[in-house]
Image (tube, rainbow, N blue to C red; front, side, top):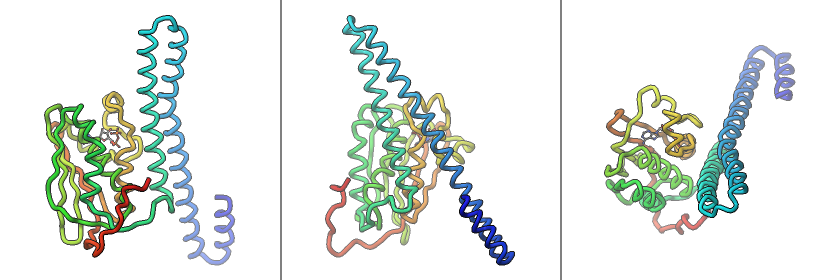
Length: 271
Ligand code: ADP
């Protein structure tokens, strides 16, 4: 930022118009710096809770060493906290990749059918244990230009939320619609829904509609932020409709491409 200030000082000697341009650039740089600082602060705060819990539980194990039952119980809670840490660090890494200029893999033709199949596969265990039925509908055979892994993660996050915020015995639908040169992937649930006030903020990093409730359900507050950035990196946009108490629909709208002539090698193996 000191460099840009220097440039700005030099530029202002060159004329009023150029200096205005550069000063705006410095402001943008400062905004990005601030965002980065906030992100690091929030991230450290979020990591502190599970790390603290693991430390306490390890101490508890030490002092309960001659009670195998208790040791087992503490050990199982350590593994829960470790899983949470793993999810959190994974999501932090995804988000920082999505926000860096060169963080994505090479783009190529991606079959939406495969993206959905992989995302659904990765969430059948979660759906089964929540007694939520996943159903796939809509168009088949649509393609987009992009990074399959990134799209699978984004669709997966929408599915994970839909299942997480739904009552047992309800249904989560995942459908595809073609609208001219746009492919729309929609995830619909019959869950708790989102208020108007929250709807405006849920795509922010670490934002949770109801902190206490979301914390209990084990969220990270990063899932939708990843969905938004992943979709934007593919030239698309995310939309949400919701009625509190009735359910929500999230859509990812992506630029459509024609099916490639020759089926390219599946990009799924990569990671
Ligand atoms: P989290 O990991 O907490 O779910 P997200 O970024 O994925 O974080 O979502 C942010 C917040 O948006 C959630 O904490 C929840 O309050 C709300 N939310 C997301 N998806 C849904 C949904 N399908 N139904 C109701 N609320 C949702």
